[in-house]
Length: 501
RNA sequence: GGGCCGUUAGCUCAGUGGUAGAGCACCGCCCUUUUAAGGCGGGUGUCGCUGGUUCGAGCCCAGCACGGCUCACCA
Image (cartoon, rainbow, N blue to C red; front, top):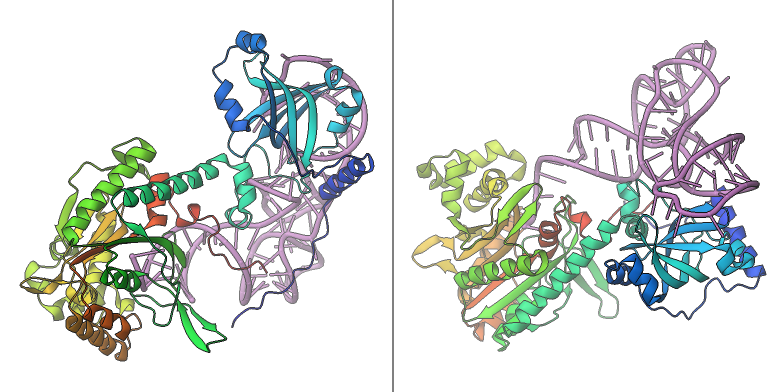
């Protein structure tokens, strides 16, 4: 049922597009280079607006500040022989003032061959209007680019969610807060890199195309390499490659890049998403918890200047230490199941099937996970480490000493979302092989989401993986938290959409 | 995949079975410190698509497409 992309029939221009095209033609006939390649400027709109915002009317007059500023026209107010308009660099607006007696009748008339959306450069001096608004008094204006389509409405901006994602550039032009979200996301990633670089972690890049998809429980995307005749999978996690590097002596590594999971979409899921994974030799999951607290509190201090995060009207306090609850105890507290019953695999599976028959939680561990997702996770608003998941659903994690059914693992939950997942890595190659084989058994029983036996990885373990703590952090979700956005698509520039028919 | 809601002008949206609407944008005219500038004049449309009911459908019905929210899967 695959759909082939078909060339779209070109849409007939609207009246407004015709008007713009003919203005462009007129400018060309007049010998104006509407799309020049070189441009000089003294400030961006944002720079000028922030630099001179505090200057008084008198100071500006006295200092005679000359500027040359490029920007996109967002509004025009013509009053006969004088015109005000606003220029934007997508972040900030700056007013410009054009007078016929200053620029001359020819250029003044030519200005009206511009449209809202065109990119212009304004050269002149700064002043403040009667109402105190910083404004460039233009001596000349130069065309930098023509906008051949009308922009969305100036007051409401672009609201249509589908259009906002498909034409993200329009979203950015019309809705400055969108740019702020992505500036924040970029700052977040930079700060994460600084954090790990400072601690002696090496940033690495491991394959995105895997012969065996591993390191997570998820359905992969398939692809094919022609020359090798090789079926490959887009990676669902970098985990197994990163741990091979630790075997090789790169004791601290991290990677920030895309994972691909062939699953449905939701406000918390995009099929390609960005994951931070890091591994530290001679550390365990307790060290990972400390590092995680440190990382996220520092990010909040640096990016938000705060000890808490406001998300969806709730205050998430980052005051350390964060709550730590045991997985089983959390399930017991919220699921309404007697603690005694929780130890009984049959009772748990029965309960999970009653509550979520569609999940097919046939094993003890999976059933517990169902109960956790349904009853516990949504209630964990404050940052909470959930500890010691069932070993059965943690095939890459070390077992807890003396507790055969638990793993040395934690998930960090904030605002009801899983933000991070970490464990003391399983380092015993024989044990790892057994866990893989057990997964293969589940697979034969019809469970699609199992780890595939990766013999090459087991071989790597056989050379000796030192005790290692490892963790994955969902960058998109972290960005949602920091930018206070309710949907993952608000923090991904181009979220996956069905191609337009 | 299920449920709910939506799709009308470039954009944001009204629209009650009987001539297709508003604001912004656009076009013409006036206006030299305006700022959602203002004043006068102009509607620019395949009402998502295909059928049906009806004398008559943007409106009622069916199917389809696309989107949003939500549930399910997943991190």
